[in-house]
Image (tube, rainbow, N blue to C red; front, side, top):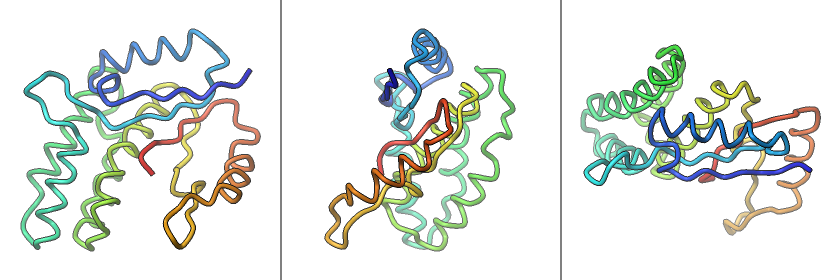
Amino acid sequence: MKKVVKFGGSSLASAEQFKKVGDIIRADEGRRYVVPSAPGKRNSADTKVTDMLYQCYALAEKGEAFATQLAAIKDRYVSILNGLSMPETLLDEEFVTIGENFRKRFGSDYAASRGEYLNGKLIAAYLGFAFVDAAEVIFFQEDGTLNREKTAQTMRERLTGLDYAVVPGFY
């Protein structure tokens, strides 16, 4: 039986949590599709990555410098990568693109979705699963509601032939 598993932010907030999630997924070969959230709080004083992205984008939207805030977000991911003994450069190109798109003012929804997107890339690499960008398989009507038919058809086509895949949430 094929299973879709969703992991929230606190379950993916650190390398230790990633390891637990990896063990959970690997414990049942039916768990084939993973939907990750952005890293949540590591402790009560911490800030969720999604909140960090909103704050960073708010600066970009005002035309203010945001490199320091974007670097702090990247540091969260580098911490996870280091804890998993993965190359800390894994997401470098993604952060360059995010910085460019923030400067182009792609929007706060784009900004918020990057947490799940980056965590999706990271967990896919960690597990050795294919990465499927939700932006390529989820479609909406002009009124903003989900286009269920087109999404289901596209998702089926995209997942055909993939034994395991990660599709980020939020979208």
